[in-house]
Length: 411
Ligand code: LLP
Image (cartoon, protein in one colour):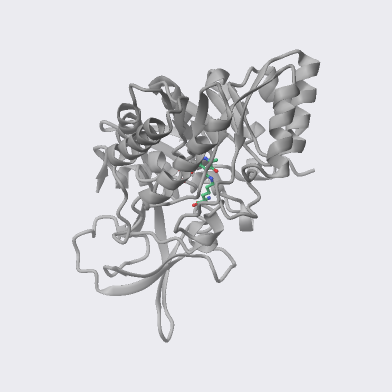
């Protein structure tokens, strides 16, 4: 098996397992897909990479090289951007409970836009902006009430969501009043994010129509940011919508609504994370022991919920192969289980795979988003290395954690 013309078994020998592998050309193609299709002659457009999906320096260097903008949600993500000299004017800073320190860092570094979640946060932003005598652009996160068909833990847009404010609610009115009164805060528009791993374009259309309708209260053309959440293919049950269709649907919806209402907008933004990095990522593991119970057969792997917590957290589904046996008969119905002391540490429940032996390499697909970024040290597992492959060459971009690093902060 080869990825970007690199033999997976060679990567295993060189870097050991578990190992995250990314196909760089695929990553760049995904970015180009959004950048080329998400355009309109009638208003500006901006494609932000939602860095929470996979925020490491090497990815941000590519984001920068492509001229994309960035969505950051924490001091850690802002700092990662700073370390690769990312232009802070191209960063939108998100979060429902940004700390004083985080806001000071963002404003001190001239962040492009702060996405305000609530009134108390705006008061803090104003205090910092006044102290620093700096203008701050804000857009307000709106809970549009549109909720998409996806796993309930990742739907964010029900009316009591912790994210955003409802249009014309007291919280909303107070925010708009303070923006109007404030010397240094510039209100620029609205943001909405309706959930994740969404395949239903109607949900995005509905949210966008709502955002545009809110623009009627303002004389200046606004920035509208419709968030991310575009679905990807984890298994054959998923059929993602191609970049051109997603992009054109949003652009056309905006144009239709603007024509109907006679309104103008300054800019339309999207914030894809998963759909940029998920499908270019793979994880390889080594199979250790194989065990039969009365009703099941287990293939045990040398990783699990520490490098991919999504199956345990969201019952997320994945597809896998045994490297070198992709074309063998898949006549074993097995459960691929991780090595954590946790019954729920099952990476795939019920997959047909060929007969395996100890030492075989198992590969899981579409692990590029929220895998490394949600990795953890439960059971004191070491965070795996990350390797990028491109045109027959491999490049280590994150080193495997060592035992000493695991303990270095312990006193
Ligand atoms: N913008 C905002 C404001 C968001 O909250 C998110 C994701 C995104 C953009 C990017 O969404 P994407 O295109 O990646 O779906 N850990 C979960 C996903 C949580 C997503 C949180 N927000 C998972 O592994 O499925």
